[in-house]
Image (cartoon, rainbow, N blue to C red; front, side, top):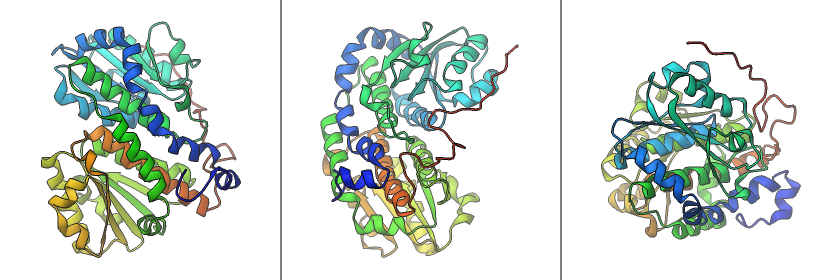
Length: 389
């Protein structure tokens, strides 16, 4: 259930799959502990690499799947000894030597909804050409995809329901993110997030958020800017992409870091711009998120500033709840200590719902926003070239 609308409403709007998959995400998250038990041998093997200070662990994908890596890498970096970093598979395919050191050893996490995009398998081949001791790990939602069937790859499958039918990635994005961060936690002896709490919050966002005044004001935007720090920057990038995809590019978007926005990108702001700040749960980082919210509200140039954060953040900065330029979307208090990967997928869920509203308002089918075929659910038109060092 999303807001007050049933499945018949979304069917009429060409949004059956998108609405269903947004609303069902929490169910897949609650399967993660069982998935990790299923993958116990892989968890042990991966843990040996994560605890090796000489190893490199690369998180990679294309588009939304790249942003999975951009959330996971900074999330797990404080937990592991290996060098953890993100690099898009599109960068690996075009110049692998720029993405991994020659002769490096470690892991390549390859994220993919279908595992059939040209870059999914070719990135594995390109990394092998530069650093054959980097072992590929495929985190994918399609057991029949090329990535899952590749014998070179440690294949880690997400629940079948996450192989989204919709054009846009929703449950695939969030489940791959939470699964991989949790795998790294389990492999290094760290506690897992409370997935039941996260799932309940996901359901509440779907039920309570879609028809609120805050969503109404965001839906009036002609431009949308998403800001976040570290792992939340990956969430900001995914948010910007979701709106572009679901509105077929009608609503222009931008993603930046909370600190980086002042360095030129702030020029985009006008009175038709809504700026959404996805606030970190790291108390130190929150200071910088709070500063940009405060500055943007004081400038008064944007239509609205929307802060999406834990309840504890708004208790720490009560001024935002009292400012007429700022809208506050707070998570339940049970998430006050949640790690940033959990807040990242919940923040993006708010944006998925916003994109759903915007696409329906524009009379665009979110299940297939580009029926003319210039943009496809599984990327087409990529030419792959032989690589010689």
